[in-house]
Amino acid sequence: MNTNQLKYFVAVAETRSFTKAANQYYISQTAITQQIRALEESMEVQLIDRTSRPIQLTPAGNVFLNEAKAILERMSMAVSRVQDASTGLVGTLRIGYTKGYERSNLSNHLRAFHLDYPNILITCYRCDTDKLASGLLNGDYDIIFTWDSTNIMQEDVVEYRLIEHAPLVVALYSSHPFAYRSFLRREELRNESILYMTPSGAGESFGDNHYMDLYKKAGYYPNILFRSSDIESILIMVAAEEGISILSSYMTNKLTNADNLVFVPLVGEGEFEDIIAVWKRGDQEPPLRHFVERLFSAAQS
Image 1 (cartoon, helix red, strand yellow):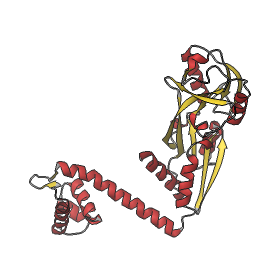
Image 2 (tube, rainbow, N blue to C red):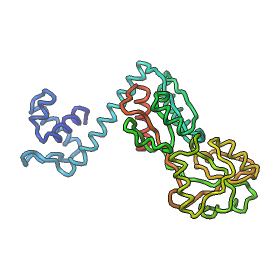
Image 3 (cartoon, rainbow, N blue to C red):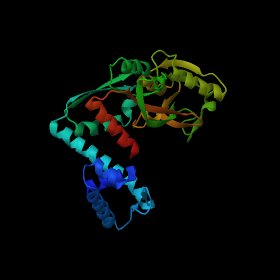
Image 4 (cartoon, rainbow, N blue to C red):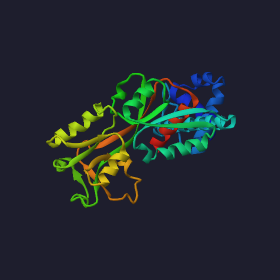
C-alpha cells in the first residue's frame, strides 16, 4: 500500500469511474486499474464491484474510503507541520482567557504548541468575559477562551469550538454545615450569604442573567453579599467565613491544601459552564491556523 494507491482509490470511489479518475491524475486507465488491483491484493479484499455500471464500492470499500481519506488528511497535515518546522515558522499568537481559567489545562495546550513551534511568541491576557469579546472583535486578540456570557456565539464574524463542559461547585469554609456533603443542590443554598462570582465586569451580562435564571428555577433570589469577577477575592472571603460561593470546577480543580476551603459539587439541570474557544472567521494567519488545528485534534482525541 502506498500514497498513490490511496489517492487513486479515493478518486475512483468518488467519480465511480476508472476513466475519470485516470484523467484526474493524467495517467492511463490501465495504470490506475493496476494500482487499485494491487491495493486490493495487498489487503486481500475486494474494494470495488466492477460488474455494475457505474462501478460501486463493496461494503469493505465503503469502510476503506473513509479510512483512506483520513490517512491522506493526516499525511498532508504531517507534511505541513514538518515543512513549518523546517522553515522556522514565526509569528505571534495573542490569547485571551477568562478569569480563573489559568487553573485549567490551558497551560498544557500552550506548552505543547510552544514545543512544536518555538518561534511563535504566545502572549496571554486575563480579562472579564465582556472585555474578551470586545477585544476579539476589535482585533486585540487572535483567539479567546471564555464562556458565552456576552452571547458572542451569535456574531456572524466568529467561529468557535467547545473546549470544556465544566461542572459547578460550591465553595465553602471547612466549618460550614455543608462542608462534608458529597453534593449540593442550588435550592439548599436559599439561606446562605452568597459571594457572587460574576463573569462580567459590568455585572449585567447574558451570563449573569443565566445564573439568575438558575436561582429563579430553584425558587428564590440569592442573598448576594458581595459581587466580583476576581476569583482570588472571592476565595479569600470564603476562607474568612464571610459567605459561600458557586464557582466553575476549572477554578478549583488544581487548588491543593487550600486553607479553610472545601469544594462540593453542585448537581442539577444547567449546573455547568461551557468554555469555548472563539476566533474571527477568515483569520488564516499561520500561528492561529496551526493552533486551531491542534485544538481540533485534541478535541477529537
